[in-house]
Every structure is written in structure tokens, then in C-alpha cells.
Image (cartoon, rainbow, N blue to C red; front, side):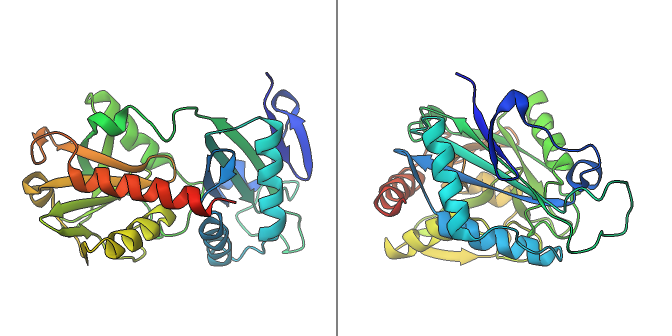
Length: 287
């Protein structure tokens, strides 16, 4: 089955979809993106993603070319056309095609480029990795200073993911100059000590994760204590548990950091419980 994608108002077979070589997303990484998960054919946490999209565009002095209502309709149509039960929708909006290359922003009236496509992942909710957990390594955080903006500038996270692959593990966690872990290559990072969940506070140092916000809210409602502060690699290795969150992995246990097991070296009960709560609540509120 040929996948149907969305490009600038049209639904097209993927092999017929094109974007100009002069598009600023291609030339300058001048664009933003969002990833929305699909469970049971419905969008989860959509409102949070739509709000963050607006925030990212405003931070780059871009005007949103689509309303959240129209975006939801477009996502639902992509789900229908591609018969997605579980998976993800990737959206990218760039500043558009000015017809030539220049560092200077084009006139604000230039139409944006909007691209979206689905990824079919039948076992997204029951990912085998959730039963075994991720192993991670730590790497220096060498990203630009505004990682709270969800831009398409993903070269260093991609390099860090390849460092993890070369080391035979699942992911990398970034370590800032202060010695604290910021986040993973495409996810937020946490440790657990007793009844306390510890994760770095919101700032320009980390992406303001939509899954992060939901999981922390559910954790507080479940009577866990939440502490937002940096934690070190040594703290992670000495923790009872660790985990990551993202739209693509929900709540994923982390069982090893830099070759040392976290807790018993197996997924712990807190991560398992939070994943269960998250999936249950998301299915209740999916649209």
C-alpha cells in the first residue's frame, strides 16, 4: 500500500510529494515540527502538541499557517487514508520557499510549507522494549541554546543516537556543563528514588515535552512526589529506577546508564505504573 502524505493542502502518494530545493527548511533548518501519536485510530494529547507548535513558531517569528481545528482534521484524514490504528503523525512547517538562498528571513507574507505523514507502528502501545528497558550512555550536550523550540535542527541529536548505536545501547542522555543530565536525544529523562520522581526543570535547556507534562500530572495525582531539578549520571546510576518519556515511546524504563545497572537492572514498578496510567488516560481523552 502506497502511503498518502500531505503537502501544502494536497493529499498525495508519497512518491509524488515534492518540496522546492529553495525551501528554507531544507537550506536552513528554518522550520518546526511535531509528532502526535495515534492509538486506536485516534489522536492523543493533540491539544498539547498544537499549543507547543504555536509556541515554537512564535519563538522563530513565524506566523502559523493553519488553525488547530484544521490541523486536527488533516491529521484525522491522514489516519483514515492510511488506515492507521497505532502509529504516529509527523508534521513539519517551514518558513517556505523564497525562490533563492539568503540568511535574511523572507517577507512574512511568504506562504509556509506544510508537510505531514503517518508512520504505522502496530505495536506502539505494547512495544517489546517497554518490558526490557532502554540502556543509555551519557554524552556532552552540544546542542544550540534554544532546545525548548522544537525545530527541525536535529543533527546533533542524530549524531548522539548514532553514538549510542555504536556503543550497542538504545539511546544517549545529554549532560550539560553543570554536570546535570538535560534529556535524551528525543525524550525527557527521569530518575526515581523511593516515592520521588526527579527530572530537570523546564528552561531553554530542554524540550517542554507534552508527554512529560501529562506524565508528571498523572504522577502527582497518583501520590508520587515530583522534584524538578538537575540530576547527575552518578545519581542516575544510584537511583531505584530511571525512565524516559516522549510521544514515540510514552514511558520507557531505563535499566542501564554508562554500563552500570539502574536499580536491579530491570524495568521497575514506578515506570510500569506510569506507563499504564498514561496509556489508559490517553485512550480516554483521544480525539
